[in-house]
Every structure is written in C-alpha cells, then in structure tokens.
Image (tube, rainbow, N blue to C red; front, side):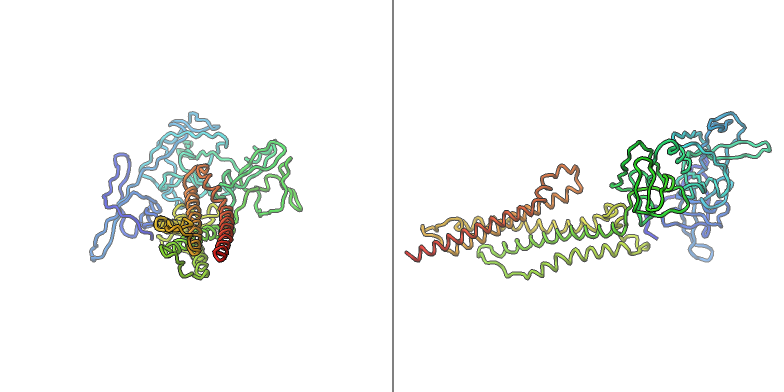
Length: 521
C-alpha cells in the first residue's frame, strides 16, 4: 500500500441535514490504497458502500489485542428529478401526472451490488436538455439500468449492448430521474439520458449526405498498444473530398473488424475501397494510428542523441579548460589524454542513462510507490509528464550545463589573466627594439588558436542553453536568433577552422622568410 498522510481529527457529521453517523467494527470494512474505505458484507445492507468521510479509532479489546472501529458519515442520496412534484415526463415534456412522493428510486450501495433501502433521500429539480442527441428513456431494471452510490455522487449505470462500450456510466448532471405512480400503488422509475446509438447517429448523418467515419474524437489518435484513443497534438483529420461531408465519430458498426493500411478513400462517395471489397462508412473508420513500440524506440533514440550532444559539449569544455589551465604563464600544453577516453565517457554516459530508462519502462513496480517510470510513448514519442521529463532528461542536461558553465567561467578568468601577463606576445619586437624570436611567434599562434576555440565553445554553449530554455519558455519566436546560430554551428566551425589554417600557413611562410633573411645577413 502506498504511503498516505494521516490526519488526526474527530469526525463531525451534519446530522441536521440528513447525514447519518454510523459505526463499524473490525471486519466490517477495509481500507483501500486510494485512501477511502469500503464496507464489507458483515456491515449489512450497506455492504459495498464507498466513502472518504470517516475516522478510525484504535483500542484494545477484552483480550488486550489491538482492534479498531470506524465512524462514517453517510450522506443522503441526492437525486436529480426531471420534473417538479406532481409532474412526469411525456414526449420529453413535463406534464401533470401521479408521482410517488417522496421520489425514492432503488439505489445500490456500490456499483455492483443490489439495491438497498436508504433511510433518507433528498431530491432536487434538474431538467435535462438534449441539443444534438435525442433523449432516451431507460427504465430502472436491476443489473441493466440502475442507480448506485459513488464517492463522486450518484451514478447511473447502463448495460448498453448497442454501444461501443458495454457499460455506460453517467454522473449528475448528465441524467435525471422520473417517476410515476401505478394503479396498484407501486411506483415505476426511469432515467432520462441524452443518447444516440451508433446506428441512429449513422442514419441521421449519412442518410442524405456523404460522410466519413473517424475512429477517435477530434484531437485524439488510435494507440495500437492500448487499443484505445489517446490525446495527440498530431491528430489532424482532413481527408481530401470533392464534396461536403459529415464527420462521424466512432468505431465501425459491425461485430468484427481489423486494421488495414492498403486502402483508398473515395472523394465522392466516402466509401473505402480495399483490394477485394468496398466498404460504406458504417463498416469502417479511419484515423492516425500510433505504434507504441515505435514511439518508445523513437523516444530512446531522441534521448540518446540529445544526451550525446551535451556529453560531447562537456568534453570540449573540459578539454579547452584543461589546456588553458595548464598553459598559464608557461605556455606548455598538458599531457594529452587518449581520444578513446573521451569516446568512452561521451558514448557510455548516454548509453547507461538510456538503458536505465528503457529498463524502468517495462519494470512492474506497483509495490514501489516512490519509483518514477518514464512512461515513454504514452501520449507521444517522448516522456509522459513533467516529472518524468525532469528525472530522465532535463536533470542530466542541467548537471552537464552547470559543469560546462563552471569550465567556461574558469577558462575565461584564466584567459583574462593570460591577456594581462602576455602582452609581449602581441608585438613583433621586444622591449629592446629587437625582433621577437620565432618561438615567441609560435607561442602567440598557439595561444591565439586556443583563444579562438574558447570563444567558439562559449558561443556553442550559450546557444545550447538558449535552446533548452526555449523548450519551456514560450513563444518560440523569442528564440529565433539563438536557433539560427545553433543551426549554423557547423558553418561557423568550418569558417573559423579554414581561416585559422590559412593564418597559420601565412605565418609559417613569413617565419621561413625571416629565417632566410637572418641567415643571409
């Protein structure tokens, strides 16, 4: 069971407004993981009742063993009635009729149990208005159409055989209750709902007009892994039709159907042509389908690619910082690090993180409430929500960017110190008016090369930081400049490297020319 917060407080029930306070002992209730309690069969006719308004008391019984009791506030069932007292629905209009007063339809204590006798029931007038779907009258029949108590309020459950989903659940205000007094003194109750079966919808929209059936609602696509509709930003639905058409939402109106990818939608009739048959809109639905395994693969590849870029950026930051720090006033490069060390770090780091992410994606951790799973591909080919993105992506990037900022900052500080102490490297003559030695030119060229690398690295890091910030700070147009600079990084590297090599070649030519002239003299 997940850890829950415990509140120490006595229970107070509003008994003046019909709320009952009941006591139950050990064995008559059970505590659920979500925090509410459910009364067991030992509790009597209210067995199965779910409530979150309770308090538990621990005590010792006559055998000095720990036991407990629970106090529960049971609210009266609040029934939305379609018509005021003395009226009932006829032809979807309230008309004078003999009605049972008070209105007391059978209500189950839980969504799966039989109806019980409630000591107190309240009613309020709530007329139902249906705009598009017609109003349907559903007589209350046990296990077919019935009312039940729920922690969210009164719920109507309808075992609808003619719908895509067998059970239809409706909470107030999506239904109202109507009652009539029979001649023998008994009462008949029914529930009014706004409902249209798939066949009725098809006949209304497609009998006189071309229509196209979409599997999921607008803004949703079909998930092959869940076999259900999920929200998606890529849920566009715009079939190319040569005539006006009605869009019908829902699964095909047939008993068995399967997914196909090789088809052609007629832009004139809305019929779907396959290799061997033609289907009317009642027998097909088209939509975008997402492949959960493909989403997971794409998400892992994107995670590995992004992390690799930042790991290699940290390699560049560390290498430039290491060289600048070792140069200092001596201008002596450090002992080189074998390239394979950098490769092991920059590739194995993202590989380990992605491996852990993929392992947690498939691990079953219901008994570990604190464990955060990535939920890859749940709604898109990326992580599930904010916490998952933080733990498996942004946290690692933040650590790398923080380390890079430290390297760049310290490198800049060293560069400023070197700029002040190595002013002699900037001229072609020393303090005595003599030409500087070739070794000084070599040091100046070496220092200039690494200064250029540092400035390029600072630009790259700044662009990457801005790119990460643009993911969270709208609007995207705000970051257009940094996005352009980030896109042109390869071009900048090519230009700077080409110019650097050209300068080095010119310097070597003039250096050779000076050596020749010195030898002649």
